[in-house]
Length: 271
Image (cartoon, rainbow, N blue to C red; front, top):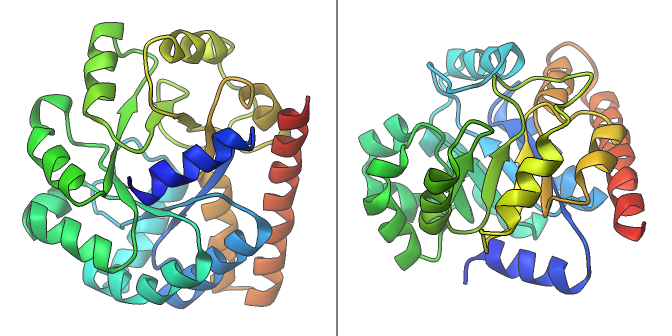
């Protein structure tokens, strides 16, 4: 079992859900990235999603695109990220999942990437631009290494295709809540609950929901049907302020924001 499998087994027995913040590695720098991951773990986040900067991001909105561009301008690369994150993965005691383009994985070498990520303490990868038809080889390498390969399902994915995607996935299935790009939203589509409920009738893996989630009301809405919730743009936007403001203040504000979302999640778990 991977670290992600172990986490969801534990959460299931405790009748709890996973809260998973996303952050861009290296924006504004890797030192602050590591500080934030440690703070998220201290606040009680179950898992963390770490984005590898890429020049042509897939489905990312302007906030995350801009953060990737800033990190790339500093020359941040996969090697730098793995080197910086290794001690944090030990300290944080929560699974860290890579969000990484298949172009990076392919260029690095599939087996070499998985081995490098595992040695850095990463528990799995989300590869958004890897279609199901081409994912079997990487999926097999990941299975042998107990390294989760998370697959994405969207509102427009036909059910038969969604089931094939889920059969190839390990760790959890990432359900994209909206047809569009990442970014904070005032409201989420009303049909998310119905769509995820229908998927749960067929999929054995945990289902985590991402894209657009940024408010306690979103958390309370989605928690009943999700095994985990992913929040990205709202956190990345706040982290970017550390380039101009005192980092202690930004870190504290991030902690308060995460506490608000965690409180909403715990309330929903108890309802």
